[in-house]
Amino acid sequence: MGHWSRLVGTFLLFALLALGSTFAVPNGNGLNARDAEVRAAAEMMQPRFQGSGFGRWLVEEGPFDPWLATREEVAAARGARAVDVQPLIESLKAKRSSPDMPLRPVLIVPSLIGSIVEGQLQDFPTEHWYCWSNWQSWYYLWFPAVTEMVPYLVNCWYEATGLVYDPTTGHLTNKKGVNTRTLDYGGVGGVAYLDSSKTIGVWNSTISILTQMGWEVGKNLRAAPYDWRFSPVEYMTNDYPKLKALFEEMYEANNKTRVAAVSLSMGGPYFLAFLNNFVDQKWKDTYIESWSSWDGAFGGSLEAAVMIITSRQVWSFLDATPLKKMLRTFGSTLWMLPWEQALGSDHVVLKTLERTYTASQMHDLLVDTGDHDAAEAYALIKAKGLLDFKPPGVATYVFYGNHLNTTDSFSLNVTSFSDAVNPPPENIQFTDGDGVVPLRGLRMFEAWQDQQKEPIAFYNFPGLMHGGTLHNVDALRMFVEIVLGNPPPSQG
Image (cartoon, rainbow, N blue to C red; front, top):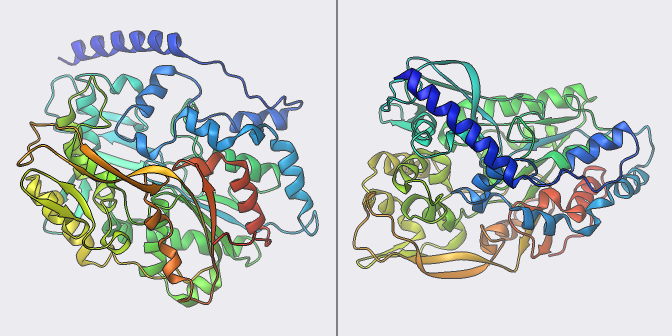
């Protein structure tokens, strides 16, 4: 059987490579670079989905689309002035009090689906004859190769990527026979791009600007990738000890200089949970200078609910049922269901023909899907207080977009949930937000402005799509000014 699966895989590989070349886009950088350094920077500033057209389409049209900006959205986010990266860098350099002034260390905290996750298989009990049981070398579990995202073979990815809930320990774990790890902890290789060919860029623009200004990767510019599939219950034991140690290491390695943190999307709740639950105020005062939250997914998102119970955002040529099941095994998906704290306990999320689910009834929703493991995992997140947030206790700069239709509630024309039925969402009601996160969540920190001595400032970018901050020149300029100690005035 293994012989035939390899033949099928080889055939599909060549077919997809041909298809990808058919839809490939030009590889221009638009920066008119003149030397090797600037050419390298130009490459880092490439639009996010340059390269294989098919691979790019898989990302843009798939279930994670709401969490990633598309080509058009990135172009709008970057704007025409994005080509003026050199003048931007020179103007920022001029704002340094001295060219020899030590640069404050910067730590990147990535988002949902924003870290590369590598996998390895050892006697994995696959349910499909055409899937591998053993794969000794490390491979990209996320972002997967395009050859994995086709009918039948995608089942191999589903089963290896999904998690299992252990009711004895209360933790989510990999399935038996699956080993995983993140890439380049403390470096930036696991967050700059999501794929090995560097066509799906995430933090590449930020890293490019900072390194051209003098920051050094591995010294005063580092990142803390994490396995975003898990929940904060696992982060408390698996990730936060490493994150705390990384802050302390950066502080010591940079002449006891406090660190500036910057997060994206779910990286915001991830970092806030760290500040609220893992370190005390004395530690924050010692090691953290500031935190810039970009497009923070505070309040969760209706898109998480849409992803786990409907057919929306599913590749049309793939079966929605196994994908929904996989997504419900992710603690992060459960954590990103709408938050009662941000939206209010009576906020209506979903209506079916028989009942209404509010933001305070997400556990009921999971129970009614029949997925009791997901319901138990969610209940544990809530029981441990990891959906109840407090002021961060550090200087916080909140970047967000708005004036975009953002799902506020929806209906399903069903009486009960079944994985065999994949209804599309109907009667979608919209609210103000960034297309993914509602404004009430994006500005959740507003209620805390008078509850801490450290400043909380807001920077609003009307029309900026979720994730667009990464490639918006004005946002990048303002962030660097904050790190240099010259934060722009708050916009509200």
